[in-house]
Amino acid sequence: PSLPCPAPMASMALRSLAGTRGAIALAGRHGHARSISDVASVEQFKELSPPKAGPPVLAFFTASWCQPCREVIPHLEDISAKLEGPYLKMARVDVQELPELARQHRVDAVPYFLVLRDGHVVERLAGNGPKEIGAAAERHASAFEELQKKKE
Image (cartoon, rainbow, N blue to C red):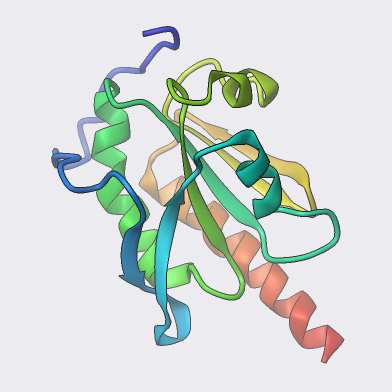
């Protein structure tokens, strides 16, 4: 592996990644079906957060060999089920499949999270537990929701 993987977080339950490749379908905010999208290319990643349009994106940088990445998956599924929808998107980037994207965003360890808004990184989360990740997702989704309400 080219990127370090921090020690497993003791507070997280171990779960297998079996069956989690591809988009994970979930029921998101407002009851609509949502999913954590797997990013297949640099171009697709850029399309997730175009300049001056769309909701914030919580991007999860991961690797198949990373145990803490596997452990955080159930928590990300919970975050997606609660928040993903018109005010938040979620995406997963495999650093082995897209090393240039990891380098571009200065990802030096996994799991690693970015929050993108209007084509820019607005927050970085490394070494954070599920509560901090959930709080960041909630904060950005709520801010975008308020912005949309003000536009109405």
